[in-house]
Length: 302
Ligand SMILES: Cc1cc2nc3c(=O)[nH]c(=O)nc-3n(C[C@H](O)[C@H](O)[C@H](O)COP(=O)(O)O)c2cc1C
Image 1 (cartoon, protein in one colour):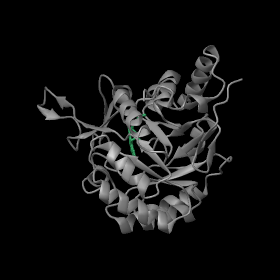
Image 2 (cartoon, helix red, strand yellow):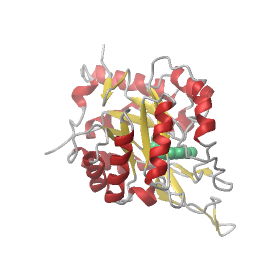
Image 3 (cartoon, rainbow, N blue to C red):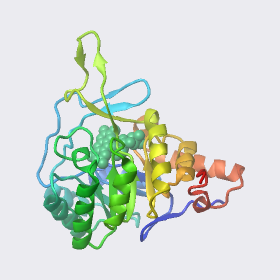
């Protein structure tokens, strides 16, 4: 028997996989389905103060090695979302509320509301690459990130995760988030990219530019986790291109304590979590690795 329990701050996960934000995390039913299908927990869709329609279609296409999306953070607004969250019976698995905002005051208001709504942690989306004034526009500035994380921490009790973008000097931003009291770093969000339709001589996406996810970005995410691990002491949640059990274990050896799974749901279906968990266990058994925790950071060459 191998042990794949892990911990992020005060949260214990029965397995290290969390559904990544933006993928089936908006309704109580979709989150319940994912929890029942084997994920250790769920991160909700990123929620803002007001309802938002997002970008015009097409908002997502499949490319050769990954997915390209420019959803533009569509969401029902925090008040409607929290009513939805009430309908979710937890089965004792953690729910992490993801929030996006244009400034510090909005981040505080959203985080406090998420906490009151009963989430186990709040994830600050400091990294969306395709929504002007939000996400990566904020998360590339270490001083701004420090200020936001510090004030959110002062106003909340639940653990706070900072989700970062690979466009910045991600290590500087991760260090700033840690200094401000962040309980974990999530790395990475999608990578800014585009696709062009040669026949029409136009970009495919309604927003022209989008975020790249899936297998193509795994090496980028791995490097970010590897570098961050050498510079912070708080846990890292690895994300980006994790599709099979082996990908998950690679992230753990780079320094991740837990993982988020997004595009794999598109490639492997809603049971992707259960499949990845089984694959991880198989590999660990073959390699005679008893516990996941002993693998964290084991590929580091100091
Ligand atoms: C369709 C789609 C919507 C997404 N929406 C969000 C979001 O609302 N908030 C967020 O922080 N990340 C969002 N992401 C990014 C994912 O959470 C994740 O960081 C990224 O896709 C990389 O992981 P993956 O390669 O496993 O998909 C979205 C990704 C996709 C594909």
